[in-house]
Length: 224
Image (tube, rainbow, N blue to C red; front, top):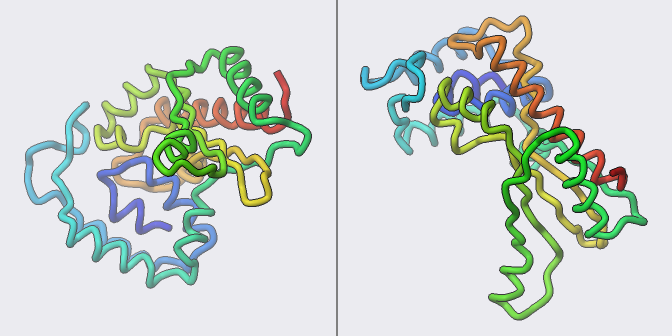
């Protein structure tokens, strides 16, 4: 919803979450949104929002909690529903194995020149700690370093939110799912947003998201 854009401008990629929530949550009064924008105006001049590769003034934990509680009051969505709105996910075809899915993902990433930069096999770590089997869950990282650099020049805080991760998980029925934070920022088109993304960066981020979506679709279908 719009509050995430207005209230957490220091974390620019949460704009995508905000826009998605705006489509399904309660309407936000424009006057209230303006107040929220003022609420979060930087309290120091340490870094202008338009200065490349700099951090904005830090939002205090108390202020962040206050703003997020306000956002909760504007929508009937549960916390789990909000997370669902912010997630792009596809179920893999039932005849595919875990290795089939991963192989297809990596082949497609290579085909579209999106570099594979690492994996975190979380289920292996859990099993090593507990000595017990657990549903599979792993995070795979694919990134375009130049897009990342341009995004960080716009908002260094975005380092915490780089849209480069695809999760592969096994649910309680042993079905395999592929999921990522949905960085679709198409909702910004035509919107009047203070400090909005440059058009070239918006297109680059959208292109990166399309690449990640293509990797997910390839993994879910077993297509090389």
